[in-house]
Length: 174
Image 1 (cartoon, rainbow, N blue to C red):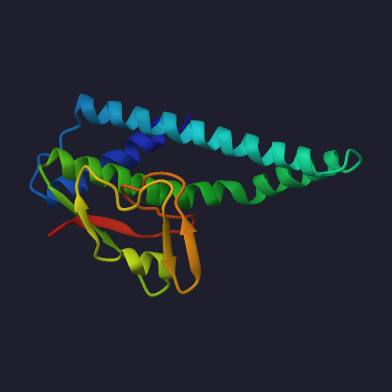
Image 2 (cartoon, one colour):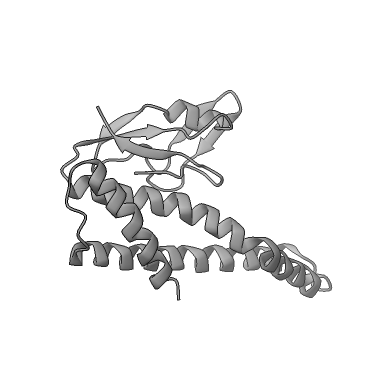
């Protein structure tokens, strides 16, 4: 169900990023394969996170309160989850499809760019960081430190978002 929406979004992002670096923005089989892989990974992560949240409630809640706690979680998901997912996927997709276009267009380095005055201290540390286009801004298992503490990185971060609520983006590096 997500594929048509993500494909449409990917085409728009890919087209703009390709044009930005002077690369033809044609929809290719490689891009279609990338989009399908992106949707598959996103769906798998969503299902895993959902299952973990429910399992956590079951394992930490008394038997007499489990049903109530699960109903509260499901009600919260109905109320807030779609917006949270849309926000995350907007940034995640933007980063993924932009990076795909830049790499296809021959860009050799990427730069992390913060998006505004509300940028968190962690992303301020990343702002302006350049990496080789096939590399990562942050490696899984590392921590990014700021005045507000440490951001533990659970996965390789080759493009934004670095954390929930991140609104950064990438540009060709220098």
